[in-house]
Length: 332
Image (cartoon, rainbow, N blue to C red; front, side):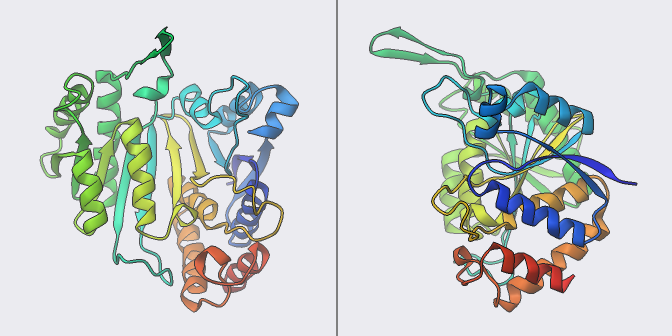
């Protein structure tokens, strides 16, 4: 069986890291048939929108997508291509596993955290307007439906992946209605899973504790804005945005993505590290049940990282994208 996957190469270093990823996945025997679609600046030129309907339709048809980083033109009235993608396809789960990697030295060891972010509401609904010339009103949206469904997804994820402890992180004392509703929905769902440890945690205290000692944390559930910020902080614990995968998951569609930016300063120079997109591709394989292939490729990646001979510049080495990619394929 082959899985048809919509591939959005993206902007900046996007084409380099997605092509390297596809090459490695193909070499590892991943049963994937790629269908390319446009997103970001190339999509604006071709279709007049950074996330055009034709691309969204391709993802809906294939149910699976893999994308590189996207740029949204500034000052031209376009909303974020990534936000538009998530909201249009109702990809309500932002899934960011953060784990220490061999060969990548950081001040922290044995980090193994999953950050889950509600992807469709909060300030990201984009409801704001100017009341007076010096006053702007922005609405934070929080519904019971969204709080319950991502909480249910989180507990089911934990049940199926051997995770034991989850914290709902918020600022309910400051935002008692919106954050409080999210926390209440979490507690309602938690009552159906008495064998999973759960609790609540202030999001500012979470930032402090993650920086101090991330080891005790397991699964973190946050609303959209908090999840956006804290998932990047968590990535910094294990080496940065260039080494962690990400996914946006709904009930019918899942899109796996690089969580870093387009890095225009090194675009086209063959220097980019494809590890974030590659790791996201491995999440895709796990998602469709091809765990054996994903584990084989991951082992090859770990071997290259442990040897340290073919690392890209951001990992302390002198290799380019092609050399790093070929080293992984050699291990395969």
